[in-house]
Image (tube, rainbow, N blue to C red; front, side):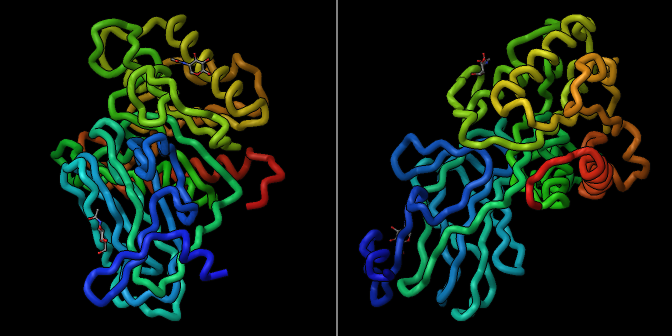
Length: 355
Ligand SMILES: *[C@@H]1O[C@H](CO)[C@@H](O)[C@H](O)[C@H]1NC(C)=O
Ligand SMILES: *[C@@H]1O[C@H](CO)[C@@H](O)[C@H](O)[C@H]1NC(C)=O
C-alpha cells in the first residue's frame, strides 16, 4: 500500500536528505472555504478564513508550504502549538516552513493553515507542501456540520487584534478569531466566510448611489470574490446553517437605500440562498454590533419562514476592551458575539446532523 502511495509523488533529492512533495491537489489536503483548482496544481483563494489541513506522522521535521500571492498572514495550528507565518508579495511559489517546535516522529499532528486576511487584499495561492521522506501524510476528515458566514468587516475580523485608535491592516485583522470562526468552533462546524469590509447588501460604504453593483450579491457568486465573476459552483459546499450580517454599511452614510429597495434586495438574496443551498437551510440574520439595520426584524418576520431568524446583536459590546480598530469588535468582543449567536443557534437549529 505504502509503496503505491510513494509512486504517486515526486521524490526530490536535495543533498543527502530526500523530500516528498505533495501538490495542493494530491488528495491529502482537507480544505475549507472556497478554493479554485482550475490552474493545475496551484490552489487559488482569496476569501477570509480559507484553511487547509493535513495529518502528519513519522516526520522528523515540520513541513514547509509552497505559497505565493499578495502579502498576508496565516495562522498555523500544528498539533497543540499555535504559530503563524507571513508571506510577502511574489507570484512564484516559495517555501514557508512552519514552526511546529520539536516534532516527534511517533506522534500524529493535525496541521491546519488558516488565512487571516480578507478578499479585499487580493489573491493567495498554495502550491503544495514538502515533508521529509519517511513522513506519512493523510487527509483529515471534515466536520459534519457546515456553516457559511456572509458579512462585512465584522465577519472578517477587521482590526480585531488592534489597539485603538487604529485602522485595520493585514497584521491586525484575523478571521480565525472573528465572531464567525469562534461561533463555528463553538458549534463544532466547518465553515466558509464570505466577507468584505465596507460591503453592504444594496449599497456599500461610501457609494454615491443608494443602490450599487458593488454590494455583496455581486461578489457572492465568486470563488475568489471578484465583482460579478459568477464562477463558484454552489454544489461544492452546502451548509446547513447560513449566518448573514449585512446592512450596517448600507445605512452608515447617505444616500442610504429606501426601505423598499433594501428589503427587495435583501429578500432576493435570501431567495438565492434557499435556491442554492436548498429549502432546509437555516438562515440567521443579525444586525449590530455597530448599528441596527432599520426594520431588518420586519423584513425577516414578513418572510414567515420557520427556518429564517432575526437576532439583534447591537448591544453586545459593552466594555472598552470589547472593541479593536474603529469601534469594531476586538477578539474579546468577537467572543461575546459568538457566545450569543451560538447559544441562539443551539436553541433553534433542529437537524439530524450529528455534531
Ligand atoms: C521547496 O523545498 C523543496 C525541498 O527542499 C524543493 O524541492 C522545492 O523545489 C521547493 N519549492 C519551491 C517552490 O521552491
Ligand atoms: C448568482 O448565482 C445565481 C444562481 O446561479 C444566479 O441566479 C444569480 O443571478 C447570480 N448572481 C449574479 C450577480 O451573477
